[in-house]
Each structure stands twice: as C-alpha cells, then as structure tokens.
Length: 320
Image (cartoon, rainbow, N blue to C red; front, top):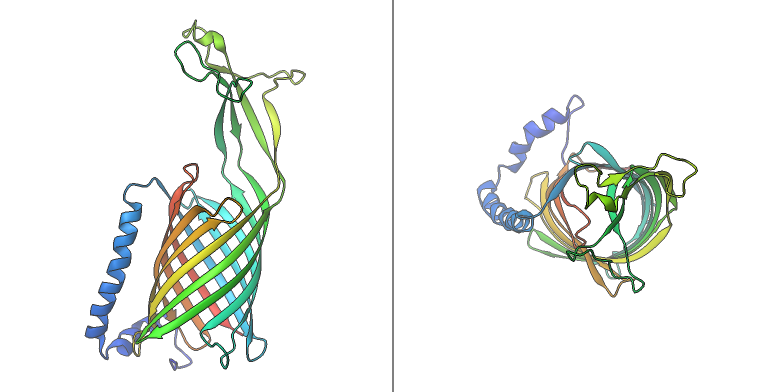
C-alpha cells in the first residue's frame, strides 16, 4: 500500500514512483527488459505486413464485495476507430465473479452482461451478374460482369452480449500466470442504413468515352431507383475466447507490467479461428482502492474483409 498526504496529486504520485522502485531496481529492470522485449518482438512480427487501423479505448470500472466470495463490478467503455477519428463503440457492462479462497483458491468464475452501441463505418460493395448455378456470369474476356455497386452510409446498431468465464492462475516467484476460458454470446439487433446504388451500363464497353461505366437512376417510380434504405438483419454468434496472461510484481513498486495473448474461435462455425489479440502494458496502483491501466494492443483478424488494428488503451478502476 502507498500512503499519501492530503495534498498529494497525480503529479506527486509519479514523482514518488522512483523512490519506491529504488530497491533491487537494477535486477528487476533486467528481468523486465527481457519480459517486455519478447512481447514487443511478437507484436512486431504480427504487425510487420498488415494493413492496420488505430483506435483509443478508454474505460472506467467500479467494483465492490457482495460477500466474502462474491464481487460485483460495473464498467463503462468508449472506443474509437478509423485512425481514432470516429466513435466505434460505447458500452456498459455488469459482471459478477466468484472466488473461494478456502476451496480451489486458484480458480475464479464469473458471468457478465454488456450492452453495446456500435458505429459501423460506411462501405462500398460491388455485385456481379450470376448464372442459374450461382457462378459469376463472364464477359468475352473471361471477367465477371458487374451488376451494380452499393454505397452504404455509416449507421448505428445495438448489441447484447453475455459471457461466462473460468480463470485459473498460479504464481511463480514474482510472476503470475493465468489462463482464462470465456464463452461469449452476442446478439446484434436489426438496424437500417441509407444506401445509394450505382448501376453498371453494359454499353460502356462499346463506347467507353461516351458512356459512363456506372449511372444513377433518379426516378422514384423506377424499379431501379438508386436511393433506398437497406435492412441489416439481426444476427447472433457464439465464440470461445482463450486468454493466456503473465504479469510481474515489482518489489516495492506501484507498477505491475503484463503481457497477454487471446485467441477467438467461432463455436457456431466448426471452431474456426476468428481473431487474435496481443497486449502489453502495465498497471499503476495509486493506492489500495484505486489503480490505472495503460496498454498497447494489436488485433489480427482472420477475415480479410476486417481491418486489423492497433489500440492504445487506458483504464481507471476503483473499489467502493
């Protein structure tokens, strides 16, 4: 525990940090350089060739003891996307965890619910003419024949998420290793977005200088009217998230660095790999009831239509 005077501020906390870390710091720093170095090498290998986005994730969490074994927590989170230029997600979560220190003290179980408001970026998709068997119709040169291009505006949608987790942890010296297996069910609500449809003109091939390749139909009475509202149907998915984490408790120091790797698999799609997260960061214990968390994360998606990305995260947690 760190004891503070009544006039202390965050600036004083960080100024005092070197004093608390002075004892055995040389030995500790050598250990931490190796520890973080391995994490950085893994991240560099994962991001070297990827096309990536960047976002900032911020969160605040409050927790309280219900009784000796039960803990209740509430969390609010805000995320950005598109090089942190727009909102990705606003969410609120409630979680209940159980840990019996007298029976299987290395295990913790928890269940949770999260409500999310998601902001989907606008996207452009091209559709092609198809044969009766579903294959693409080809032109004389063997290329698929375009049908139209859909340009969707950005839109918001709500998601409901339920989770159930089991976490096992073990200490080895000042290191702590943990493995968490989490079942995750997510339901995306039905939503709508504005769509503009550009139709392909086949005469463009014959008269490329006089006929545009795509055109808009501005007649509201036409069956091919270009301006419409598209329905995004409701959808549910089931995933298993497996997270391996390691942290290091620096003696007499409020900083506790950590590294994590988490794999997502789709339970409703033959256990297909969905994405993987690499994370390195540190916690800073302000005092017994308050702490900060700062981390860097890289998300690598299996789906080529999803953009992998870098995340800078900061969180504040307190007990009440």
